[in-house]
Image (cartoon, rainbow, N blue to C red; front, side, top):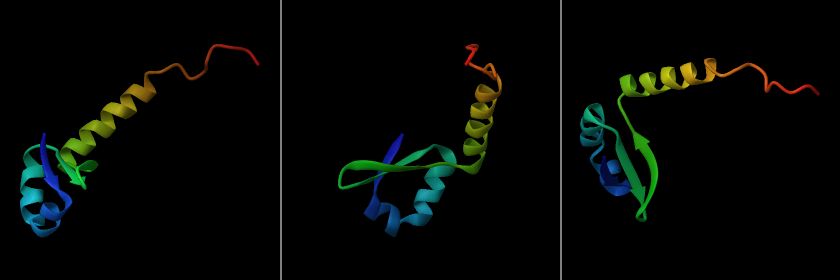
Length: 65
């Protein structure tokens, strides 16, 4: 995963978008990761995967109250 500083992301926003369309890009501020920018297709894929994981879980805990 590529990492850009917040300053580089700010002043090179077009580049950030281009990079993020190919792979997720982490943006760091003061050396600490703060966000990941990714293509909307990748976001949708992850969201659908997460929904599938949630939907496949049992609806109850199996314990009586």
